[in-house]
Amino acid sequence: MEYAMKRDEKTGEEFAEVYLSGQMLLDYPLLNKGTGFTDEERHALGLTGLLPPHVSTIENQVERRYKNFVEKATPLEKYIYLVALQDRNETLFYRLLQEHISEMTPIIYTPVVGQACQTYSHNYRRPRGLYISYPQIEEIDQILKNAPVPNVEVIVVTDGERILGLGDLGVGGMGIPIGKLSLYTLCAGIHPSTTLPILLDAGTNNQELRNDPLYLGWQHERVRGQQYDDFIDAFVKGVKRVFPNVLLQWEDFSKNNAARLLGRYRDELCTFNDDIQGTGAVTLAGLLAATAVTGSKMSEQTVVSLGAGSAANGITEQIVTAMQQDGLSEAEARSRIWLVDSHGLVHSGDKQSEVFKQRYAKPVESLSSWKTEKPGQYSLLDVVKNAHPTILIGTAAQPGSFSEAVVREMAKQNERPIIFPLSNPTSKSEAIPEDIISWSEGRALVATGSPFPPVRFGDREITIGQCNNAFIFPGVGLGVISAKARRVTNAMFVAAARALSEFSPARRDPAASLYPALEQVREVSRAVAMAVGTEAMRSGLSECSNTADLEQRIQTKMWSPNYVKMRCKAR
Image (cartoon, rainbow, N blue to C red):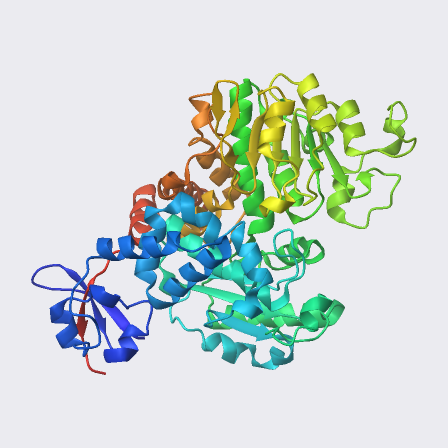
């Protein structure tokens, strides 16, 4: 414990009682203020002479850092600059992000974090979080006890196998949990001293990485089967022993493992998978807003989903739940969803080993009357022409797959087609919004996975909403830890989606974005947290007794990046 937050008995002012001084204090990013230390603090904490004499306000420091930021030539250089600031002064890092959130969020997370993960071993500077490799399977408890922060409330973990749409990046995947936890703090105010990123290094099947002498991970092919399961199980058991009350978020596991691991452990500890449940909830929120614009209900929609991985799994399951809440049976809801994978339409004529695909496989005999380009094959365009969807969603990471023909067919069938190309980073998007808007004659309701600039069509400027998980998972995490929920349920994510949907500008202006601006994200996260905590109370999973108690806990948890006064205390 390097510090403790106290309150002055006479003045009521909050201060940090710190156990570090001198250079060690300047090297501790959670406490370092740099030139922001006052003269009084410099004398008390052994900093006199270690800093330039001028005392800067945090506003001065933000201005200085922003000027440095804009001078960086490339997005990757900007990312490296911000991460270096995070490693020196976390309060200033988050204050800078907060004041430039729309500009900097795409840098610290998608799409730029993908490039940072690809070049991780070549740009590595300073460790953050924990790295656990398969050969250390017997040491997991001790490694967890080595965590650099003492009071861990949220863990984000990855094994680096499916980083965004970029594939197996091994140890480079550590950029994802670091970035996700930065968003927990930025968007929901969860204090950085309570967050822990973890990389489970099970090897990599990326031969280019294994051949790279600078690669920092375990240079071994990925362990599979029982070895892999034993590794994950040892990790989960270690977490339960060392951090029994933590919220564990799974991130960027392969589609073969993501749903399987969530299903295995969701009833053992407080856990969720953001690729599945978070993506499903944020997409559902956009769809609820879009259907409000069209004056229809979710139960009236027909959905085509291109892609059959973790994201598609989460999205379709959330849609089914919403349709059921609108009055459909589960079977009726599933019948309104058409799943297209890399081989075409998922149907009963193909033997499906994945339970997820089996749920949505269409009876092959029901397709006999379809007119298709190639007999017996059912492409995305064939499905759009014959199934007449109102909603088209892409999670396949196949750029260009929403072709002009596909989009024009959607626009032919619908006055306001709902088209969400959600794959990221930007280079993996199924289509660019400018094309979708043009091909649909300005009528499509569009949301994307990565940020895109507004689209000019005629005399209109159309804002493209980003279907950004940052609107969901930080608020879910805030609600879960504030309510001290024992488990995370799908109903909590549906509640989160409905809360987010209410912030859609399109509900008030049909020409506006389906999602709010990132500048509203803290307000959104507070509302999402209340919805999640309320659902936890309703389902008997919370320690909270009433709404007022929950609201107070959420308020207490929401940290703001401001400097606090510091006083020295000898050990």
